[in-house]
Length: 376
Image (cartoon, rainbow, N blue to C red):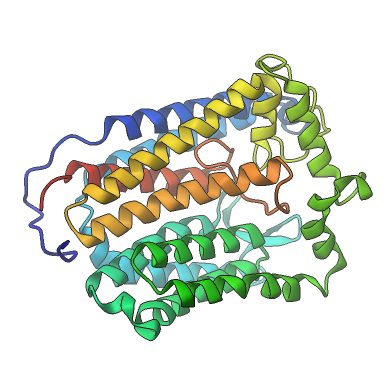
């Protein structure tokens, strides 16, 4: 039986972190910087007068993220159990503040950002990691808590639900679905009732339908992936251009930097749809390598969960791994036309500091857990 979150002394000898997780993370991060430059150079030159604009920004965020990774890798992960409550409260406050007119920054009809001038952050990206930490701390505090439907499922989902609803209000359907999916999988991993959790999952579809039915644009966006060619110039445009990019890449791709879709054919080519540019320039082999790296990262993450010295570490490692895997799977599914467009980025690769920094911080926490492997 695993011990509680505070059962191990923080002064215990720590080993080396999981080198494979670290190498995979650096590989995805390096590929991301290269592909952000390749995908964004045309629009950056046209809109900013500097083809290296997004490369510079992404490189700066990568440095900040790596600093966060190193710091978190050297902070005993059990400290996060004590900070779980304050972190989720701060996240709720930030998600509330961003909705205040005149405070939150609105871009393309969504009020998701806080910041001044060119420096902007999305509280929802940091809230995802806070939700993982909170659930790991709450569920590991009492081994039998998760067996109770009220205390083990509904109580933690109240706070998580507040975060999800606030993100949905921005609106940001993709992040809210991703956050809810991570919470659901963490509850299942912790031993929550499959029946109750299955019932909650079954309620998702009608809730999303009710959310979208009063907005024709939103409804078309949710259903366009079923037949994007029915509306090729509007709701189906993104998916069609994404599939054209993937298809034109063939087996080995058109060559690095030689994408045609980045010339204002494929929208969001350096953020939400960067995987399509990877498929176009690096081909099926390049895209498959990226999928393989995510699968390998997930395997090592779940391995870290199994080898963690206590229940908090085990759930935290599983939650961080699930967070990365779910986001990667959702993004790739959108780009390949397998699910509706959700506006979610490809972790560690897509342009954007708000997504990159908390993701690297989460990997840092995961690496710290691996340093305690076997200490039971």
